[in-house]
Length: 112
Length: 110
Image 1: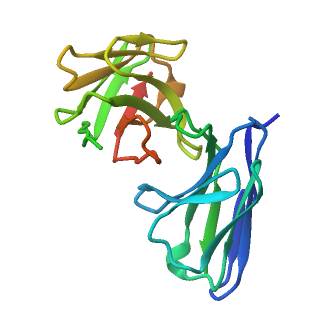
Image 2: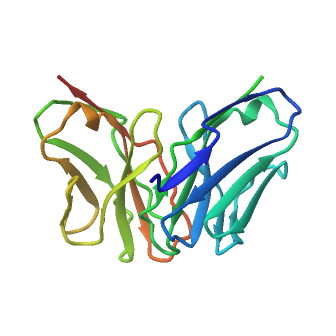
């Protein structure tokens, strides 16, 4: 049983399209995160949700909208995709206040 | 959060101990030292953390100097599967997010 699972694993799409990435965790954690890793391999946090409430929103374009239907799921919807959105997106989860995060295996998004 | 400094890359022979240094000279009393690693094409993986005392688990040992200005992650018997980027992160209790630096790219050679 995968602890933090993301779908899809790969996503190739054209500029201007709208796409979603899904994340689910079965660890009973109450906090979930989205990280972006660009081509230079820098890992940057984008969003964090605790019990379905947004607690971190870094300076991310508002084309990116996270949605947490329940504390086990955190999806990322991206509107009007741009070339610069190409990256690997990682979902993670933890208990609030714990830094032993569990990460998913990533979604490689390529915008062409 | 305290800034950490790590060498950009290191090599180690398979079967030997890999010692990865981290400098955190501005660390404050309530900041923990966390270590993660990222194996190629995978998500980061938690390894170990500590505050003052040395820590050991099934993956690694963490040695923190008495003044807490630096630490060393030790992989006692490195294998090829330990080739990864290793991140040292200093975090105060209650911090809301994990912030990754550039890390050390450790290559284990056969």
